[in-house]
Length: 414
Image (tube, rainbow, N blue to C red):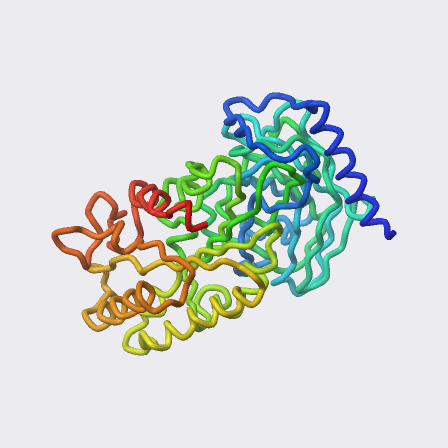
């Protein structure tokens, strides 16, 4: 048995004992209580994803956004929202877009207190890597932390803090996080108060996944898509993207993992690699997941006059479904929502969108379909979003639109 496996087994044993004894959980304010999910008494805790974000791009090492590696001695405190709870957690750190080794000399995990960068008293835990407090991640690589024994809340916020002591080149980030995180000068990863984290940022740095050890959740569902899945136009810090709404409906029984990238395309590089290129990494590698909801294609359609045809997009969707099916996954496909009124949604582009939707509804590509087009369209102008569901740009939904999307998913199909 290697050292890492020993840590995993130790965490599993401790988590099982905690489940049997009721555990110790220091309060988390207004975080919702997890649901009572019946599981067999002999159920063994397993690792399931509770949060994730696709690595998208590299922030320049000299920019404020790239501060943690670009400016020696800074710390970043990422705020992430859980979809399921557990008795321990592990965090994935990425240097996918880095050109130099990423040196982490301090990292921590805590339950967030209130709406700022402070941790709930007594919940901050040091993150280790193979028992060490430091780790180096090579360019293009990633590392998974040791298990952190902590009661992770369902539908709550976690703080994941990272200190990098010296410039390390471009920083791997997920921009358009629709979530405020924080920066501070110095090694403050172990600071519980959060008082020094006064700089606000709008992207996640270094981290791409949080898994929890649980015997209650039944698995995870991955949502892969573009800005509409990423949550662009949703109210910041309100966790109202459509995957968040779906997670609330599932009540902690399944993790919901958001692999949306704003500007992403199915077939070609847009913002970040194409969905076809990143599918294995961002979807099929997610812990505990066996179901994916595919909501991609509108950015391909809107590339007129050089846009692919409906047949091209349909072939790409079919390839995604085939690859997932080959791994034993269930695949739910979504229709493309209306875009009428958007400057790039020409009559020709919209005609291709409608052809794609017909193929999704009737072509047998997917195991089931969630009809976002039907859920969001204006009944009096079906090629446009219903005004209450329109953020104002005639492409991205409003908060009400995202809520409608989250409720359009038939839970029985999952």
